[in-house]
Length: 138
Image 1 (cartoon, one colour):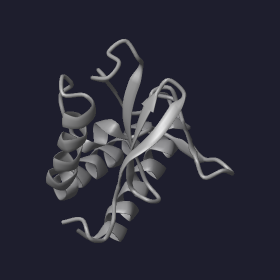
Image 2 (tube, helix red, strand yellow):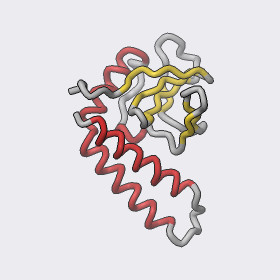
Image 3 (cartoon, one colour):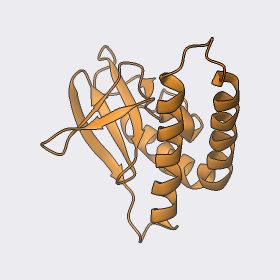
Image 4 (tube, one colour):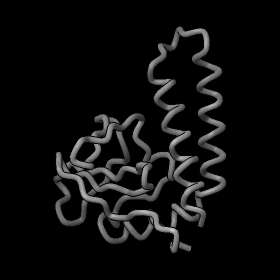
């Protein structure tokens, strides 16, 4: 797997989502940008879907076996911001809600983030990287 290409394509999705989030529905370019975003998402799922779904399936088995694995783009945050300490801040609508096996009552999400490409498990305000892409991944 070409991890650099994966990360570049993932960043393109984030940039387009950020662009769209800055527009209102009444913006004259909203429909065009939304269509481009959907095309990017479709291309991303087609190109990396099998690879990422396998990883997401393994994560689900470990942390949330009762939750369904969705398309990789469902796990994306609409926007994100890296913090000074190397962490990441995402909006409340980021990722996919899951039923955490260790604590079913907890509010838990899985979030796919770029730079580097990784999956973060967020439980409440606590975030842990549960997978990070490496060039050796096949």
